[in-house]
Image (cartoon, rainbow, N blue to C red):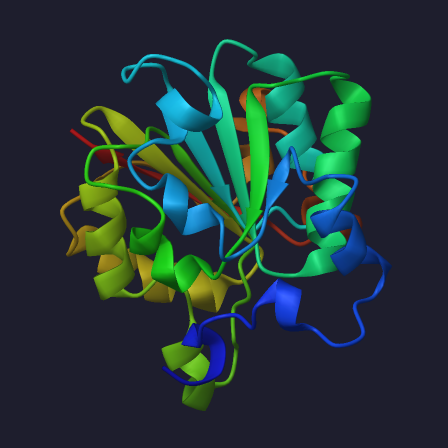
Amino acid sequence: MKGAKARLAKTTSIPFPNPYVQLLLTSFKESAFDETLSPTFKGKWRTEVFSKEKEHPLDVEIGTGNGLFFSHKASTEKDRLFLGIEAKYKPLIQAIKKALEDSPGGDWFKILRYNAYQISDLFEEDEINNVYIHHPDPWPKKKHWKHRLLQSEFMESLFKLQKKNSFVDFKTDSEDYFDWTLKKWENSPYEVTRFTRDLHNSEWEPENFITHFEKIFLKKKQPIFYLRAEKK
């Protein structure tokens, strides 16, 4: 695969690793896994990584960014296991560092470096519960739409990986991306159960956590688009 869907370069093969790469391999190696180690836990996240039973809830955030939501969820839902997926080193380290600062000694959350396009490398069918996708790259130019994460193929793969009665929460500041994906959600195996073009003036606003990107766009008086798709 080329472009955004290409597999990530191996962390251990980087000739001149920057401080964030070094931290992934040293200080945070118990809480953050690189792209080589992560797939080895496929089908075994609960039992081998978290030492929990197979039915324990396991949620996933795709694209943690600087980790505000990742840390918030980790600190407020300690009864659920939580995995973050992030491809870039700096936000990955920022996210796990903040989560550990907010929840010292926390052993119910981990973060991993991986390309979300290949999410099927990481999980078996029916292995994960709820999934959160907040403000993915909208790739606004039409010639770049092929790089968007939320393709029909991706949705079908993700659906198989989730347990029954789980959901995907999707937020974006891009109306174009939202409308483009909406057609795909409606033609996917999922059922869209929440939908709004202005999250902060909707019935779901009270339960919403404002992410870093949301703060930026709210200051600009720009609405946030949101939907929930469920696997019934």
